[in-house]
Amino acid sequence: MRKYILITTLLVLVSGFFLIYTIYYTPKAPLSILSSARNNLAITQKSVASKKDKKILKEAQSLYDSAMYHWKLQNDKWIWFRNFNAVDSFARLSISKAEEAVILHQTHQGKQIKALANRIEILEGMLTKYKKVFRTLPQQKGEIKKWATGELTFTEAKTKYNNKDYDHAEEKLTEAEKLLIPIYNTLNSRIVNYFANYNTWLSWQKKVIDDSSVSRKSSIVVDKLARKCFVYNRGKLVKEYTVELGPNWLGTKLRQGDKATPEGIYSVKKKKDEKNTKYHKALLLNYPNEDDKARFELAKVNGDISKNASIGALIEIHGAGGKGTDWTDGCVALSSPDMDEVYQLVQEGSKIAIVGSLKPLSTYTTD
Amino acid sequence: MKKSFNSLLAILGIAALVMTSCDQLPQAEVDAATAAVSKADSLEAAIYVPSEFAALQDSMKEAQAQLEADKSKFFKNYDGSRAKFSSVVTLAATVGENSVARKAAVSVEIDSTISQVTALLAETRALLEKAPKGKEGASVLEAMGQELSSVEASVTSAQSAKGTGSLLPILDTVKAAKDKVTGIKTELEAVIEKYQASRKAKR
Image (cartoon, rainbow over all chains, first blue to last red):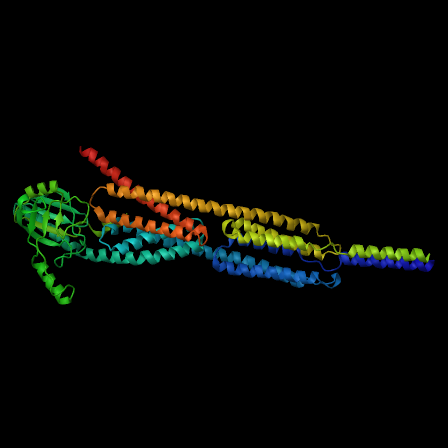
C-alpha cells in the first residue's frame, strides 16, 4: 500500500516537474523581436520607393524570411531541444537592415528630389524660351514634331514627380531631355549666331533714317524677327506695318530660289503700279547690292552653293500679303491696303534697310 | 489496490497524451490563404491597389507568425492561426475584387479621356483655321498643328498599348495629351478673343 502511494506521489511530482519545466523554462521564441521586424518591414515598404533602396529592403525581407525559416526548424524539434538564437539574430538583423533602408532612402530621395526639381526647372525654362522665340523661327517639320513629343513626355514626367513617383519621373525626364535638348541647342545656336550681326543692323537702321533727313525722301526699315516695316520721313517714324517674308527668312539671301529675304541697305529702283505687277503694287529693290555679290562669290568658292547657282533678282516690297504666313520667294509682302499707303509715302531712290532685328536678343529671351 | 494503481497510471498516461497531443495543424487554412493571396496577385492587385495588397501581405505574414507561435507552445491550439488565415482569405478576396474594379475604372477613364482628347483636337483644329494672321503668322500656327499631330500620334499609340500592359502609364499618357491640347486651345482662344476685341475697337 505504502509502495503504491509512494510511486504514485513520485509520478505526480515528476509529471508536475516536467510540466512546469516545459512551460516556464524551455526556450521561447523571440515573439516581440519578430513582431518588431515584421512591423519595421511593413513601415519601410510604405516609405521606400526608389529602386536603389528597395535592394536593401529586399535584404531586410530576406533576413526576416530566414528568421521565420529557423523558427519553423526549431518548432519541428522536441520542445526541450529548441534553440531560438538564430531566429533572434536574423530578426534583429532584419530590423537593422530595414532601418538602414529608411536612412539611405531619406538621403537618396532628398538628393533625387532636388536633382529632379532642378532638371524640371531647366526644361521649363527651355520650353518658355521656345514658345517665346524659337517657335517663330524656320524649322524642319521633323524638329517641330520631335519637340512636341518631347513636351508631352515632359508633362508626363512632371505628373509623376508631383505624384512622388520619383523613379518613373526620372525615366520620363531623361526621355524628354533626349528629345528636347538637342533641338533647343540647335535653335539657340542658330539665333545667337544670327544676332552676332545686331550692331551692324542698328548701323544700317541709323544710316537709312539719317538719309531720310538729308535726301528728303522717305526711308524704310524692315525688322524681320518682328515682322515689321517702319517708314521714316525726315528722320521721324511715320508709320509701321506688318510684313510677311520668305519661309527661309532667318539669315540673308545667298542665291536664287533659296526663299530667303536678303539683309542689307538697298534703294527703290522702280515703283510698279497695279498694271505692272501681279502683287497689287510693288517697289523693286536694287538687289543684289555689292555686299550680296561679294557674299555670293565667296559662297561659290567655299562650296556653300553650286557653281551654277544664280544670285537672283526681283526682290521687292509688294502687296497681296496679309496671308499670315511667310510665303514669298524672298520679297517683303504687305497687305494690299498697307501697300497702297507705303507706295504713296516712298519714292524711287528711297533707302531700304532690311535687318534681322531692331531689338536685342534679350528682348525675346528675358521674361 | 493494484487495480487502482494501474487505473491511476492509465489516467495519468491518457492525460499526458491528451495534454501533449497537437491540435491539428491548420494546413487547409494555410493552403487556402496562400492560394487566395496568389490569386489577388494574379489579379494585378500589386499594381492597381498597391497599399491594399501590401496590407494583405502583412496580414499573411502575421498569420504565419501566429502559426509558428502556436506551434511553439506545449499545449498546442491553432484556433488563433485558423482565425488569422481565414481573415487573410476574406481580405484577399476583397483586395482581388477591388483590383479588378480599379482596373476597370482606369480603363473607363482612359477611354473617356481619349474621347475628350479627340473632341478637343477637332475643336482646336477648327480654331487654328479661324486664328488671325498676325506677326507670328503660320510659323506658330504650323508649330501648333504639328503639336496637335503629335498628340494624335500619342493617343493612337496609347490605344494600341491598352491591350498589352499596365493601364496606369497609359492613363498618364492620355492625361498629358489632354493637358497639351487644352493648353493649345486656350492659347488660340485668347489670341482670337484679343484679335476680335481689337477689330471692334478699330470700328
